[in-house]
Image 1: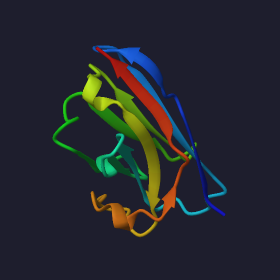
Image 2: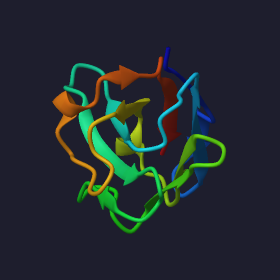
Image 3: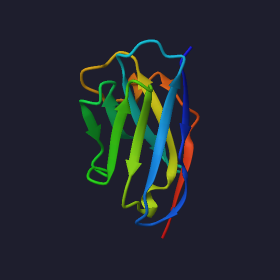
Length: 126
């Protein structure tokens, strides 16, 4: 059974960088997409970035484009989210998720992601 394990969150200052990791445990298929979402207090969970399993096709939300970089290492079944130039508004719980039905182009639609990690807190102080 698929299980996602996130790591790398923490407390940083504005302008700093963090790298989140999401390891898939028990996954046998290598054809899927992985996405990162975030949820700030009293706000809905929102799309951040997504990548296909082969690290070829990527999508970003407008709010993080140019600052965040998503990547996937299919040999390790792990996805990464490199977050640079962090802002206080990036503060949220970050979740990784798997879309098992798309491996050509990832989607931003949260409903397509059916396997979720437990989340990791990212806090950016001003």
